[in-house]
Structures are given as structure tokens and as C-alpha cells.
Length: 332
Image 1 (cartoon, helix red, strand yellow):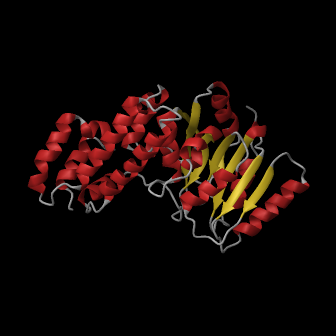
Image 2 (cartoon, one colour):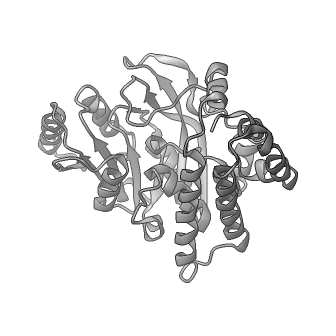
Image 3 (tube, one colour):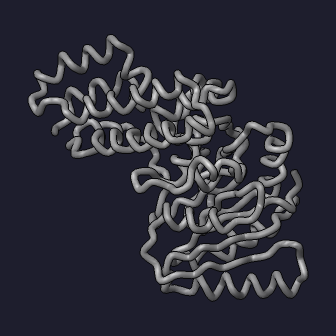
């Protein structure tokens, strides 16, 4: 695969402050992309004007990269906007991009090497350097901020990504690249899932997902991110335990019910490993049980302990045994 078959799916919404820098970083790749498909969700600032100007400059420069703009009246939201942009891409490989980040010049070349040699690879993401609104490094990389453990990293590299992503999503769309073949299984995107986590979980259910340990973009954190990263400080962790549960686990159950239904539908054309189907069904049942825990804390002890002994928290909960404490202590 060469870059002549690579598209960029870039979504925008009132991103005039950063969009030109992001476009320039994509255009500055050592290995150039064939097209950038910009899907706008109803921007009211100067985003569209900037994109059109940069596109005109690219055409005048007679480079091999094309910029196509899909504008709209808005109201799609992030996930449906990315579905629109990705669906419009023509390349065999599609790179997802946010409007406010900065690609490192070797990003595309490094990721292409993986796709060139691994035909079963459907989804690849990378680490990212966290920077502030001015582009100043915050001193941490994305995967460290997400506290991705060494065992989870090893499991993903060894082809066990599905068991990791059942517990929580670790792939950030802004760092991700997919093979077009994934769209046969993933489209349309369900409303219960964010676009990047849906693409990731489907990819590792039907084929391979992996990550590149290098930071290949500057991932900007500026307080207005549509989807950003929250650094997991001790105070935030305590707050999560003490805040009301609300419908969090119900929403997780509905997400995995959607996944199970999609995998069952796909099984006729792309057989799903029986253990993956069993794990997905088990995750759905686990979150259903958590959503129905009694309001009285003492009455939660027995069902939580029972699931702990069964290994459900280790297998399905994002924080393992910490989620056991959360389920006992958290207000309903």
C-alpha cells in the first residue's frame, strides 16, 4: 500500500482557531495522502472559509493531495459527522483526524508500514503527546494519561485486543487509521457508541487491532474539545466513586446489546470466534446486573461479592476490583 490509496476523514465544527494548523500538518507529511475529506457540522465561525482557502492553495500548487469539503446545516453530532466523512472517503486506508490537533510529519509513514505487512489489521491507533491550547506540551502522553497498563499493552500486541476493549475503549479516533474493509462490518454507526470506540471494538471482534507506541500527533487539550481526555487524578477517582451512578451501567448494557446484535448479524458472513461472542454477551449481562443493584448499600454486598468471585469484575469492569468498591459505595 502506498499513500496514493490513503484518505483523511476530518470533521469540523467551529474550529477556525486551529483548523489551518491541522491541515498544514497533514499536508506536510513525508508520505503525502491522496485526499482530505472535510465534513463540517454547521460551523458559524470562519472554519469553512479557511478550509476553502487552503483547498484553493493546494489546487494552485498542483500537489497530488485533494481537499474535498462536505458542508451542512449542522446537527449531526460527532459520531454521525465522522460516519459521513468516512463514508465519503475513496482510499483503501482511512485516517481519522480532529480539527484541533497537529500531526507529526512521520505519522502516516509509520502507520502505513504496519498496514503494508499485516493484511488482517483493520484498526491501528497510536500514542499522542498532550499539549495545551497553544501547543505547549503538558508533560504526558495520551496512553500514560489513560493509565494503560503493561499487561493490557501486551495483550493488544499479542492479538487479544477484544478482551481489553470489552472493559474500556483505549483507542482515540484522532490517533487512528482503519482499513476500508472494516466499514463492511461497522456501518452504520449505532447511536449508542462513539465512532472511534465502535470502530475499534468491531475491528478486534472480526479481525486485528493494534497500536503504535510512538506519539504521532500533538493532541490538543483546550477546554472546548468535543471529545478530550481527562487526566485521572486521585481527586477525580474519588469523585467518580462518590458521584451518583445514574444510568451509566444501563447505557453500557445497551451499548453491548447493540454490539451483540451486530456480531450475531455478521456471524453469517464473517464468523465471530465463539469465545468473543460469549465475552460480549457476558459483558452485556454484567452491566445489566450492575444497573439493577439495590439502592441500599448493604444489599449490594452479596451480588457484588458473587460477581467478584466469578471473575466478572476482572474480566469486564474497566477498573477491576476498584469498581467493586464503587458499586458498593456509590450513591444510586
